[in-house]
Image 1 (cartoon, rainbow, N blue to C red):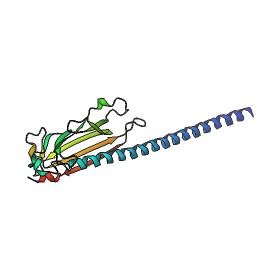
Image 2 (image 1 turned 45 degrees about the vertical axis):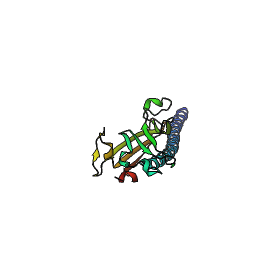
Image 3 (image 1 turned 180 degrees about the horizontal axis):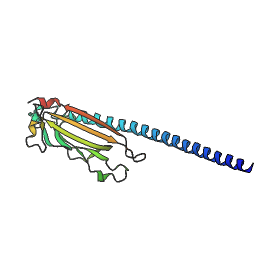
Image 4 (image 1 turned 60 degrees about the horizontal axis):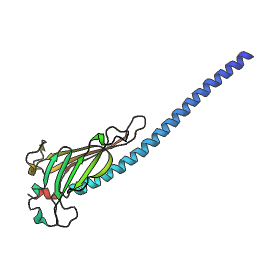
Length: 199
């Protein structure tokens, strides 16, 4: 009878251990799903905010309430590279020409977040202090096209050739669950500022 009791106890311990491992796995998966779902929601909100700002500003390239201030819109882009652009616009619609500069900062700026790839996307109006558009941006790429829809290689020597712009933005979590970062990606293919068409 003593052997049966020991076997019963050992069997109960093995079954109990399997149940505990199963419960830990279920709990871990539930925690991961909750973390990833909240991270996805945050990423969606972050990229929506970035996209709204970018589309609003980029569509006003070369715009001024007083059109005589920018008589030749093809000269409204004054700096263009794959990760930054500076252009003329009228931010406040007051008839005064402003310069707007978008660029992505280095990953080394965000040493206090776990994600090694996240950066700040900066928006600078005139010579004001750079405004951080958002946190968690991991990609901000610009591709420029001429009127014939051909890619203009960077560095661009004749900025007046730019007719449309492709914008690609990616946002990731600033913290990861088990070293996995969820990502949201957005691409505007051939964004056209109305004023760039006025040639």
